[in-house]
Structures are given as structure tokens and as C-alpha cells.
Image 1: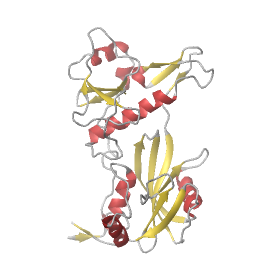
Image 2: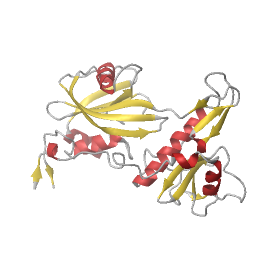
Image 3: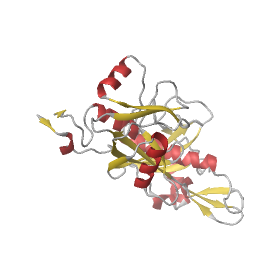
Image 4: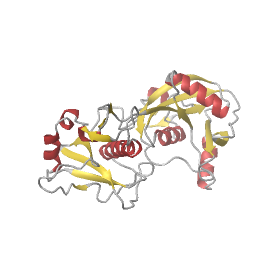
Length: 300
């Protein structure tokens, strides 16, 4: 049976429903409870190197806690998944897998994203923003208190937008960022600035980066993306403009049909985002005709 794609639901699988990883805010308030969780035989520790890489085999390891020792300040308590307590810390040894490239199940993905986000915050926030005093990690690593003025600090998230822009022929605008390897392309994205809505940021960023005026914005969903600490608000939009990149952040961009993208992937002149990012989802669902409002049909 064939149905128009607009009659089919589109969701960000793994992020649109209640979290599998319970951040367990009430548990992290009590150091005694965290100590007990740290010593449970079932508890797991995810090690990440400085680039946010980890191992899949095995995914996590026993905490290896010594009886009587509380979890060190360098360890973050991520929460509970299927009654298992998960912790994370940096590791001096290099690892092999990244959230950008690895296929993870939803629970693993939520563990990795939380771990990368909070450990990035550890690394980049060592001192109080008010008085410059050293920060002491509290609440299982999801807060910090200044040793001098007592001010409490928390991990911060930078809101950003990412948008798949199509024209009236259902072509997709793809662009190459100057810092990427040759041939790599993606859809357009950028940070939300102070004092603007997410939708205003879509209009501004796409006009600034690619000289495209867009209309018909459609919100798809949000995804945490801790590189370094973003929350991505994803959209679809339409434009009738030719497009012209800024030549600064983006070195080139163009409209592509599905046939052109498939041919370029086959001869390896183009590469697309990998892994579990929302950019990957939008592009590959456009290729399959699964996005809302696509002009093709999806075979069920």
C-alpha cells in the first residue's frame, strides 16, 4: 500500500518519549545514597577519553569501587537505567567510538550523551564565574559550589537550530563547511542568539549562511547534542531562492535532487553525516521520501 508521507508520523526516535535514563535528582542529593550506589556490584562506569570516545565491547564496566571509598569528585552520577546505576569519568587511555558515528540503542545513547555533556562541563568550568574561586563538584557532578563565595553553578545548554530546507521540486539544500573533509555536506544549522526565538534563528541563520529566505517552517523535535553542549531544535522549511553561501563558515552549497545525492554517494564525491544525529535522520529520511510533506510516496 502507498500513502502520502504527510499522513505518516515523523518522530525523533529515542528522544520524543520519556527518558529511559532516569537522572534521579532525588538520589544525587544524598552523598550516602551515592556512596551506596557506587559500591553496588551491578553499578556501571563509562570511561570516556578527552575527545568523548568510549568502548562498546564492553559498554561500561563495574565501578571497581573499594569498600568504604566514596565516588571521587571526578566521577559523575548519570542516573538509573533498568535499576542499574551509571557513572562516568574521563580516562587517560584513548578509546575508539563516538556518538557521531556509532549505532547505539536508545538507552546507551542517552547514557553517552549525558556523560559527554557533564564531563565537558567539568573540563570547561573549573572556576566561579563571579569571583574566580575554585569550584567543588556536588550533587553527583550535576552541580558545583564555589569554595570562596558559595555560589552554586549548574551545567548549561546552548540552544541551536538545524533545518532541512527544500525547494518546490523537493530538492534539499546541502552545504559544505570549510573545516570539514572534502565532499562532506549537511543541512544548515546555527546557534540561537540572545533575545530571539528558535524560529527567528532559523530565518536569520539560513539567510546569513546561504542567502535563502524560507517559509512554511515545521518543527520536528529536539535532540541533545553535547558537542560541546547543544540542544538542537530541528525544523523543515521551504525556499524559492537560488542560494549563495557566506564564503566564511560555509565554502559551498547547492540544491540536490535525490538522484544526484545517490549518484554522488555511489561515486564518493559526497559524504553525509553519520551516526545518530538529527541531521543524519533528516537527510536520510528525505532520501527515502519519509519527511512530512515530501512530494513522493512511501511504500509500506
